[in-house]
Length: 366
Image: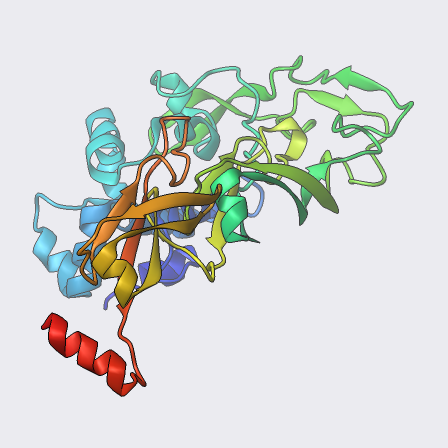
């Protein structure tokens, strides 16, 4: 392989498209030629890597052909950074070839996206949404049938309880940034690959926040969030099944600097019942009856999840016969009725018969 694009972006081959995008943005900020310590050659290399890995189809070809991938592209394929020397190459390179989100251009390239109408000029830096969390919760069979409330213990990022998420030490001043006037961005002329032009960049005085603090919060260090253990009361709906997931919006990790919180996903594991088997919203069980009951018929008690009910066994019932107890099954989610209870009959074959009993059966010729 001519170039290891995964190594250039610092991600594993198993990385998701979102992880690749995040790695690209981080490195693009780091090596942008206009930033202190920037490296134009490295910046071009990073962009080239993302042009391939950021596109699902190109990534698949790259993974399959390795170094042959570059030759396979031909003259009509990937152009790399050199393809952006004019506006048409720039636009095509990002929209159709690289698959880069145009909303990111203003942040990654110091406002070049805003010049061409791609970004949101004058907006503050976008805060990163909190991460989603997934946890496993085990409940009993009956709890899944009828619903239950459970307390879930989690260690997660929460809003700082010292500054209440505003990132400033209580009592300190919070002022509009005097450099950017609260926009989070500054405008200046810089030399770019497209020539000298007026561009917008993230305000270095407030780091794109649009405000400054006389003293940042000591507990969260100005991030607005901390790591802590929390207890949440979770309502499990009646009828939930093993392996199903509950999503709680906004109960995941808190977002830094006032950003939206992520979501909490609770995967449910239901313990088996000793008496019943679940099949969708139906309940299945088996009931043993005697040979005499099967021949002559009877009324028997059947245990259901709602308590015992009477079941009529007709005369001549055969082993394996299934009787349906309507609406004695599990509550359907969103209150759409109940399933049924299916009872399979098993006839107990008589053993250790006396001579007289055997003679009677022979006379009956059953």
